[in-house]
Image: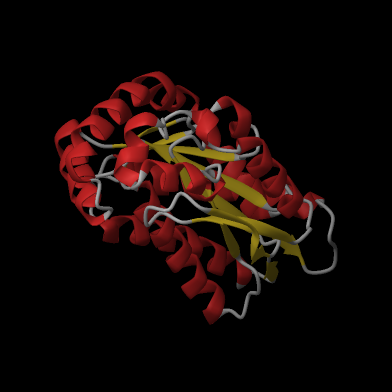
Length: 284
């Protein structure tokens, strides 16, 4: 996400002067939200504000990659969709092309459709195959795709069927390079993939809320009587593989905050970008 001076595509003295101003404004936005009632933030590393300011001012002149992780049913996908929807609305208003591209971590599960057929159902398959470890996903391929997009190259992404077939179709979805690359998933901030992201976000949710959401989703996916075992395994593996990634996150969000508050906060950042646009700077 960048803004460049009208007459140059390089990081100029103008953008370097602009960065402290943007950082000051972002500081207020972040701390006002942190101190608000039912804040979307649990905590954040203040250094991320400086990094974000560099992208917005144009001092960092490349696309920005955002990774969102959290337990199953934490709300990470919902938050990602709200961010995407808000940015797309803004980009449509200002006729900005290729503002944001989503890369879904879930699409990188290995194809296990033959194993599902042999087991007779996804529920039976899930009893004997662990989907809740990073090794269940081809994260090296995902990291490669993100780096290709950041380098300005189009990529054909895989698509994983979450309806219960465990089938993955490779080279399925065209993804174009954009100003922002955003990804969300259980293992988005684990060791093999975390280095691909400029901004690392972890979504925290209470055990009670997460469990209720999980069982609702389990019913939708026809997990049947295997739901209890799947939930127990997911919770145990989360303690090993997912919870520790929160320590590397730049931002920890509440997965229980009002969805509208996420959109309001993103819009406040976009309003800052709009303001800079009207100061004779060119968006993106």
